[in-house]
Length: 306
Image (tube, rainbow, N blue to C red; front, side, top):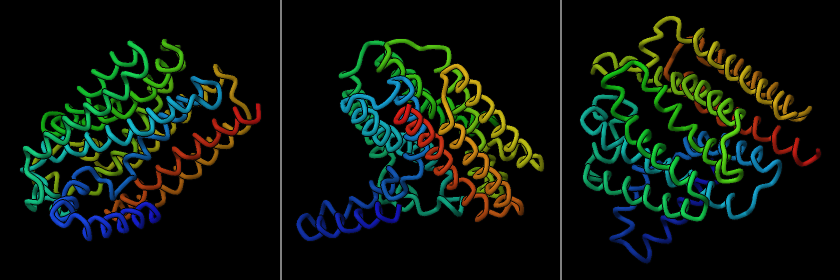
């Protein structure tokens, strides 16, 4: 991620020299779409790539790889834009989000909504090069992604909605390759939902103090003092679902090594959240990038050497 930020800084300097007016407004949209914070893209990308490799039983076509990598980036950015649109009136009351672009006036709510629409349309254009079933699934995916930011006002389970939104890429990877949804695709979908709820609860623990004051709901608030135990249970069910899928798919040693690495990383997260301090919880959340990478690496190596 440091390399990514370095490239971003050099690009911004180049634009400032040649297109000063455009460059002046660009940081606000970069912040809106979190291009400077790619962790969310990675958390969305790793499970999607894992599903793509499993569906193709090895390296997928370059066309599909391009579509899903670019589509993941577009839809994560679109999700961030609609999230800031929805949270415009509350972000200023939370320490972590008080400098977001709508709050500071760098971007208007209307511009955030237009950004969501444009990025979603670009993602849809990519899917036109797949098949009908994948396109049909995309409508549900966008609807859930747009719904998620508003759920924190009505339910203590917005992380479940996020889990569904973050798992649609798995289903679409299978339909794009196989034009159907086998049973193990749904098992991977459920597994990813469980994992997403776990790591987004860690994320919500960072803001719990502020959310309680302003009336925002989350699983971190719902779970209370049982938060770490329930996160561990969700992570355990995630691992179990992966193992069940592995049995159906005949995945071998490399995959199980990836699972062992994920378990070790979960233990590290348990240690990081021990004090429930915001810094430790945020580090635990970021650590999930490595969990996704470990699982994908296990799948990648399995098909490479099988």
